[in-house]
Amino acid sequence: GLQKLRWYCQMCNKQCRDENGFKCHTMSESHHRQMRLFRENSGKYMSYYSDMFKKGFMEVLRRRGRNRVKANVVYQEYIKDRHHIHMNSTQWESLSSFVVFLSKKGLADADQTEKGWFVKWKDTDPERMARRRAAERLDRMKMSAEEVAERQILDQVERAHAAEGLKGDKEDEQERKTLDRANKKGDLAFGLAGKKMSSAPVTGSGKAVFDFAASSGKKRKKRKLEIKKSAVELLMEEQEQEKKRKREMSRKRPKNVKKDNWLFKGIVVKVMNRRVGEGQYYKKKGVVKKVRDKFEGEVLMVDTGDILRIDQEHLETVIPAVGRSVLVVNGSFRGYEAKMLSLDDDSKHDQPTATVKIVAGEWKGEIVKGVELEDVCKLSS
Image (cartoon, rainbow, N blue to C red; front, side):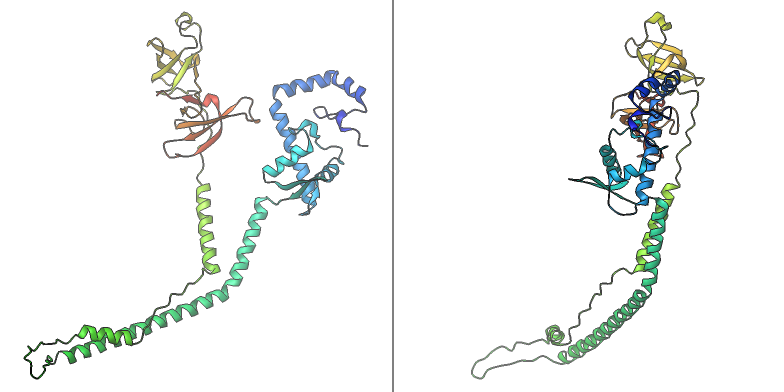
């Protein structure tokens, strides 16, 4: 049956009965052999066990559906399988830290109460999410028939209002012309008896009459109909966005092919051969001024100003500080100028990696993660 998990060796898949048995196992030759393998690539084993533990736990949580359940209940159900991955072989020290990890990654909804941690499964499978979106689009298409008919009716009403307004404008124009002709027939003069007054011609103010007639006539205001986007238009916009996203995804990155030669003009290198210049230039920096036959370069030493002709076998790349300019000398983006963003500890690699941002060329703005340090080199200013 299931025994204490603390006396289980994950590397050897060995379950011991008690502390004494576990101690004897750790002193055995087979255990030492497995631990030597672990030391050679500890990050690989730790990442593998952590990933397997997460998959097994999430599978049990998925079977629980969308119900909120206590994290320890899910864990107890998971460890019933005697061949499960033990938590003491993963990157998480406790169940609480693992639940916090799931919440931060958006894999599950988690909340802490007085009774402990509770988790709730969150569906993040791309295929299921795509099927759900397709079903929602289908529902919108079924509901859009009535909205399309309503839109057509509103368009007809709008055209009728426009035609009626145009007819009214023509009637007003005809009325204005009639008034103008009536006012142009003669000038009017008025005078008072006993006083000689100069007759002042009063011209027919057709414009004033027209303004009065226009103000007293029918006032028609064209009404703007605010029509909401129908489901068909929303569906078309969503399809356009989906096409745009697919075009961006179809833009494949260059293949990660490494070449034997990595020397480029303008990069800063370091001499790593003690025999060069009788050790005078050992671990000294220089700038590559010219590349000959792909593998040989003319290097201008920074300290002395001497120019050395040296093979790349005796040189090493220089890693600058974060924020400085680099050149990708090997791999997918070989030959692209970039900016150093960060140095990362990647569990998939034995050594730290770099994150860079391409600053020129076709891939300008592209952020590349997991670049090996030997594939980037400092650029001379």
